[in-house]
Length: 178
Image 1 (cartoon, helix red, strand yellow):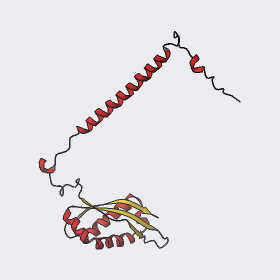
Image 2 (cartoon, one colour):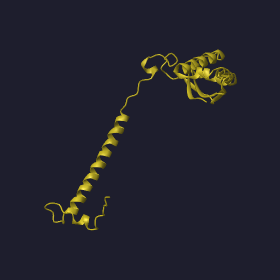
Image 3 (tube, one colour):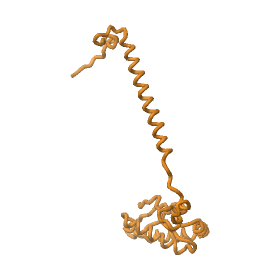
Image 4 (cartoon, one colour):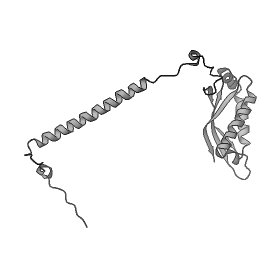
């Protein structure tokens, strides 16, 4: 066994540096601590000032109207109007097991006219989504291909309900099979 003994109370006071008569030793330690603190504070101020300055100097892309580019409806990279739906919980069409799907959906439409129509037809759209989701089996929900197929099916079915405009995309905000 190894026993470690605590140093006596005078241990720190008995340490002497070479060429030091212990009169200026405590002053040297205080000076070094103050210098280290000043260096750390200076570095923090430097990074805060110059990092925020770099963020402020970032240029934004010009608007489509200013640069003569195509409109947002014609540009597929531009985000359209989004409609967040309440989460859906459905029993999956799998007679061998009692599985259910909980899915949160956000629908992207091309403009506010389509959004207004979707809000008018919200009950019919919810019914369309519920009917489609409950027709799925567990195998239909597995993997990226399954989710992509579900998105495509939802887009097509919702576009059949909407007359003015179209659904650009469907985003899953939640997807749980249990």
